[in-house]
Image 1 (cartoon, one colour):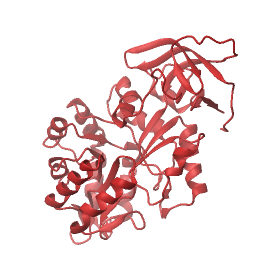
Image 2 (image 1 turned 90 degrees about the vertical axis):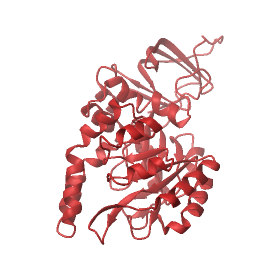
Image 3 (image 1 turned 30 degrees about the vertical axis):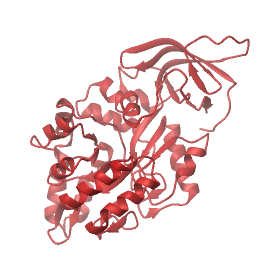
Length: 366
């Protein structure tokens, strides 16, 4: 798709899905802003008809990053454009070594919420991705990234430990609690990459706000997440790669490979159990490392496959996700960031894969 203006004002008709229980017949866009009051103007309107949702949210992706580390601005632009054309108009960047704040200044690119650069334990993460530090420096680096980002900090909560040959927690409870407290003092929330079981409870008890992947959730830790209101972003399209990862590392780390296969085998049960317990679940793809961008529709389909009801799966990438991130949806006066579909996505979330129109800041894209 390419960006172009389709007129100064839009009239959207059909089914405007303002919220799960708020469906309206029409909406206007004037000056890039949403209104539900018929404009008093003789100007021409471009009419767009269909099922209208707020711009989709990819709540875990990495713009400015590929499998080898930071990428140039041209590559980052292509990543953001791919997400945009798939309907993802709000990106929560869950860690990148590239400074991508310029994306928010581009009228033709999705809005971005940056978590700064990953913070990992020394030699306990993917090369060229993270600040690799020891626990004594954790508070200082969390404060640094809290100031650099857009209200989020990203920790690597667990990773393979070569001395044990399996996933192990990265941070002592005291240091991580102090770091999370410092982030909160600075107005930032904290999330952490976690695959394993044992890393979860200490992070939640330390006050963390979100866990990425969360494949290690169990019947013991799910109630703790629900009680504390800690969200998860399961990234099921990424978890689908676990068998291949295990096969590649089995010879050197057989214990880890077996663990990854077990986490993969129960992934859908894990996500459904968390949802049933009241844990907030949001849609994220983990695009930008080894995965392509533009996969948010596939992730929502994966949430449905896990047993999450259709409207809840939609909310995980629309109404609920925007509320969680503090960004407006289809509300009066909000920026017109929206996606139009030919059929009702509540009936079949696979409709998300083929938007009829993408509207960003009031302009039709494509």
